[in-house]
Amino acid sequence: MITKSTWVIWFGLTIFSLPLSVNAEFNKKGLVAAWLFDEGKGKVAKDSSGNELHAEVDKGKAKWGEGKFGGGMVFDGSSQATVPDNELMHLEDFTLTAWMNSPKISGKWQIIASKENRGAGGNRNYGIFGNINSGVIHYSFTSGGWKSFDAKTVVTDGKWHYITTTYDSPKGDFKLYIDGKVDHQVKPGAVPDKPENKFFIGGCDIGDYWMTGTLDDMAVFNRELSEKEINQLMKDGLKTSLAIEAKEKLFTTWSRLKMIN
Image (cartoon, rainbow, N blue to C red; front, side, top):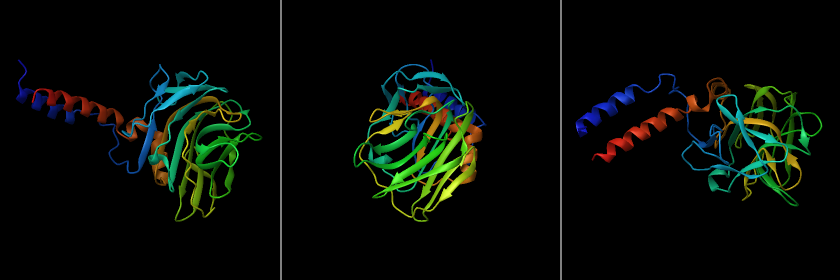
């Protein structure tokens, strides 16, 4: 018979046996949402932040495929996943980051991810896109008008690229990183609008804004990540950097322990 004391001992041993690869130095402060895209089936990409901001394929037939770290979500130029509006995603300072592998531009604008209200008089909190004409990354928000900028490096080349945009509202620094390095930087000096609408991933059914390619390891923070932090996420991936696997293992262990109380 397994006694309570036996479970306590096992619980302690489990904690000390958690993977040493977990990077305890990464500052998870401000994490709003994290999608690993490792499900491999179904229509829902779970949010691993604990905020339950799950993304669901609600247009077209996005598929599961190989990602940069584990699985990824493959968009065919006519599909999208969305997260319902939530105040946690209404941000003045932000970081939006994801791995992207796209062979070409499809549609008017190739949405990677965007929190916005499209259509006439629409506005945007934050978003990253493939530019319709050039294949470089377009990053933007609105603040009573468009604050829209293009990066320099073409990324629609069928290779994996780590795309990150950050904004520090008090300083006004709006940056776009490609593969861990600043590719473009401006100072729009404005506070972003905060539309009460969905967070779009891989496409948008209001208009013709579709992505062709695969996305992986997407995350949103409510602060500007540093270049060092961005490179850590790029190198180690979300699961390791945010200790997601260890957190889930610890939760399961603790749940089992509580069952015998």
